[in-house]
Image 1 (cartoon, one colour):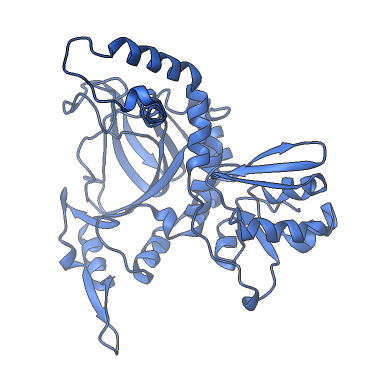
Image 2 (cartoon, rainbow, N blue to C red):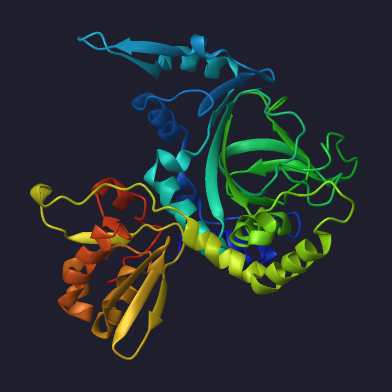
Length: 398
């Protein structure tokens, strides 16, 4: 899936692919203002907050460095039948923003199709799980204090400006679950300055950072942070621990006597490591992901006219003489070899209007599409989902 935002980020940061992810701090700028505004705007973020029932910690508000109590900007909306639904009180939220505040929407990809598609594209690019958080700051409000993240982040400044300070690590490759709490900030300042509309920044895992609009007067800042959690050696070892249960030697009780069963355990552990490599783990990790949420296809709602592949990672295809196998999220489908042209189109990650696709790869594409939708590898391209691709990902049949 070729996404314009990823192309723009690579160009801005001087990257030639995903290999630079996590290797060092770098920043740059996207030259296309229309692309930046297409991703998300302050008003669209507020519209998301208005139309959905959000709760803390999904949606939070901060003032002067402290979290504002939800009761100040949430109201229970009561239906005529007495049903209570928590909704953001937009008047109260507006007053907070006028005073100066920071709004945070975690996992914006769950609520907004453009954010959903951007995260999916980044997952196909990085082969890791991605989520995006949105941060809207108004007037002189501050953000979070100095902290570090346990994942790599790509930050895109979408509107206004915000002052940042990025420091080095005080512990190499820190983790969420770690042997060291890593609570003392590094003294090394890697970069300090103002992020303006279109600027992009990559902060690797463990780098201390903070952002604020203190001293910047009236105005606003909107940025999104794509969090990319890469697998580690510890992730591989945890995976091996699950596999060890297959072998009887690991299922026996550990004797208290000195040296009891130590040699047999060490031999079996060495064999397990040799049989299941980090590459095997990474491949298994992709296959273990569940299929994502989507709007189901129902015949009673109309014909299937457009689809898109919505899996977390790119499906794998294995072509044989007379058949082709599709493997994704623990599923394996076997189809006739003649389906290959249609599959390449349908599994591209790009929207596929079936009538246009039939003119390119033949009328069998509709039948193959129905199979993939039934297996939840592809999803119906609803108007809202389609809006997440418009102007950012070209149609597969174009």
